[in-house]
Image (cartoon, rainbow, N blue to C red; front, side):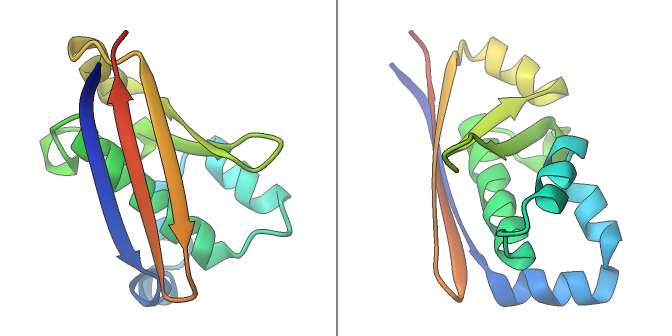
Length: 128
């Protein structure tokens, strides 16, 4: 049973401007240690695309949980990683994990697509 859905659209120009203004502070604010490691290890990743895609996923996932980031969930509580074939998956931690448990969400599905200008993420939370 679907317990929640979320979608988010991010303009890459906005992420690029934030990165130019704040540099690593922005990356350290929104990315977990594993995400930072993934970004640094994979030379095939475009940094702005990675940040924009992950930001869109985190926003969409916060909508699945029905709380958003203004209600106690932190960006680092939602980890967006890729498997060996490049497919994204989400790992919840902290308050995000607790909220998913409260909502009986057992599976989270994510799809990301991007263009030169934007990133879109779609997330579904499912209970069994």
